[in-house]
Image (cartoon, rainbow, N blue to C red; front, side, top):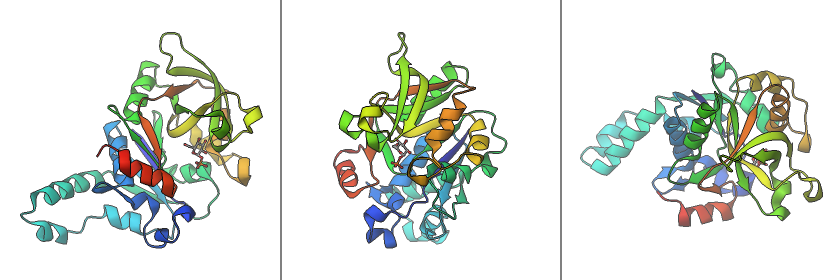
Length: 270
Ligand code: G1P
């Protein structure tokens, strides 16, 4: 399975720290956020993780290129050596793509299309500013739901308070009677007005999408905010393919803003 982590944003909400530290590299315990996310992808079955970065963010590549000199520096420090082994193992699965213009989440995902050309099963997408805590990682649980449904696309969901629906992609769909966490999607809309939102079930940072999504993204016209929205392409996918929603267990931390990041530091189980 292929996985994509879009991580090309400028991190304006973390400026000025983001001048030198991309938000994805902010530490959560001993490891940066993106390492937790990439490890979640591997746990779910990804054998290659494409990180989509931007020309102004060389630090992400730097982090995953492990310089041999570290072996010598860490010799005899067993905890740090174990971390180095862990990082090296993960790094062998990481490749990069670049988003040269900031044209939205859908456009960022599209930049990973060349690496996913041969994908025959749904591609896992993990947003670089969402960490999910829980016994079973969100992507692992979603991959199971997808397999149970013959390889269907699955969108990770979370219930949000009504006053916050306009910050998210919101779905319309019906919960299954045999598993009320699973929804058969009938529609989804990016950042609707509160009074127009079809539900309070928000798209929450994790997606498993049919490779057909790339063709749809390539022809996707700009939507909300003038950006190429992943939500809009999923909406078109729905027209010819079944897409499930899955209210994954576990708590999502929005680490894309300083308050959410500080909250994550208090409660993320490292
Ligand atoms: C993105 C998606 C949105 C989703 C949200 C949280 O929005 O476009 O559909 O609900 O992530 O996963 P952003 O937070 O980048 O504005």
